[in-house]
Image (cartoon, rainbow, N blue to C red):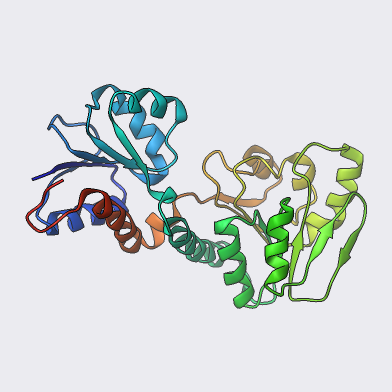
Length: 290
């Protein structure tokens, strides 16, 4: 029978513990390492790097380690020692399932943080990857006037192919096509500050809600100075996020870093996603076994 260690005291990990126990596995659930000769270790997805750094020297050859976004420098060293790393979100379908849970959590955060209904609001979704795509569709379905901020021409083409209206942001001017959702293509690099500020003054100040999925600082002092003072800023990127939080505090902006939303708003569903991936690798049965 396999011996499993689940680390991290978030509710998602608690449900994962219950699911593994229901399959007859021997599971240790705690917040720090306990010696036990484990066959598999489940790290908390939102804090994989933190927990992995605490147990790196304790990993033995043949052990499976499950988590998300493993630090490359640790992967390279430990894989050579015969340790297997499985990134949950790199498994088929997992990223979109997680994106759906994240989008639902983002909607909940927006409702709780704002003072107005979402329907009819002008909203900005920064980044049009998996999470941005699902979130934009959810917001649009709720009646939001959604704009997507994205630099990839391929992703812009995907949005247009779905029949959405499109707006491409250039150096000085904006052009638009009819449609209830707009798509913006802006450079994330540091361009001419004077030109960028003129664009900011026209563009950033129109949104009541701004959602970020881009894992780099995209709203710094220049752009934040143009954001509406009553806007709600929801940051879905991993820490440290995409907003300059010191500047947000100085300007009195309502900005919130909201990583790990699936564990907060849908912990049981999030745990089932992790469990299914674990089961596909370890071939669990009611009698146990790895």
